[in-house]
Length: 348
Image 1 (tube, helix red, strand yellow):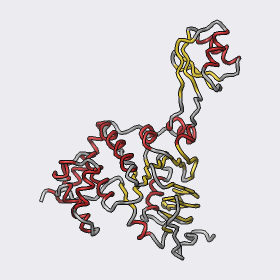
Image 2 (tube, helix red, strand yellow; image 1 turned 180 degrees about the vertical axis):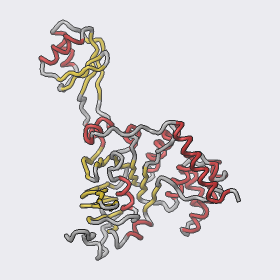
Image 3 (cartoon, helix red, strand yellow; image 1 turned 90 degrees about the vertical axis):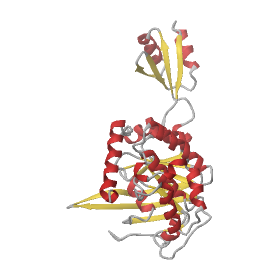
Image 4 (cartoon, one colour; image 1 turned 135 degrees about the horizontal axis):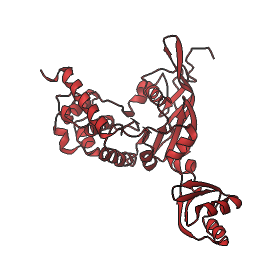
């Protein structure tokens, strides 16, 4: 491999594998940005595999290389090394063919502020050689409703995301790539997006979802890949990564100090959890009650604590995901967007 030269195995021959069960496959993917006198490695030897069907979460801390990877999958950035295959189409030779079958929702859609949502979609459909009936279908698909008749400049952030999603669905994509679709939304908007994504996957579309709202990801994703510093840390079905067995149990008992001593002597790991104890190292919770009862202590509460994607993510990366933006920040962001729209010539 020559330093600094892009390596694309089999790409220049234009080979494709339309029968592949993978909608996305990367091998040794690498992207380096040059900032003044230093190099920043955004993606470092990434091997990513996304199976056809369902919703696949693409997770990582800020600066982990998620957005750079998505840009390369969409042909918006060129790797320094490695190979990419999307829907069986090898890059870079067959990027145009792949993009006819891929829809994407990015952070900010490009719409005309003075036109209605429907009119914006009409123009996009015409540019893509699609029938106008397709506009009605996607408006219904994303539940845009009567808002489609209103001008884009008056849309809330949630409606703007819905319109962007409708635009991404116009060409009936086989693969839908969503980059932080819930970012900045209020709780109602997040819930709407959470309900919409599995419904789209149920129509046969494969979804690649990049998000930092891990509780939402755990509800909608069937599988995930977790990256940090441009490298893959873990990948697989959510149920396999988190494990189906109860790993910890929250125990309520009258004497926490003596209970902790008995459990520790029995070979269990014990941690304080407010007025309760968190117990690890057992296969069945009844083992805890039996041990404590033999010591003269009786359990008042016993709750299994199953692992969450957030706890798994924190253990794996050492990073706690950022919380969703507060309402004041969302309002400020929306006001700033509307001001930018006005500056773009809306007050003519």
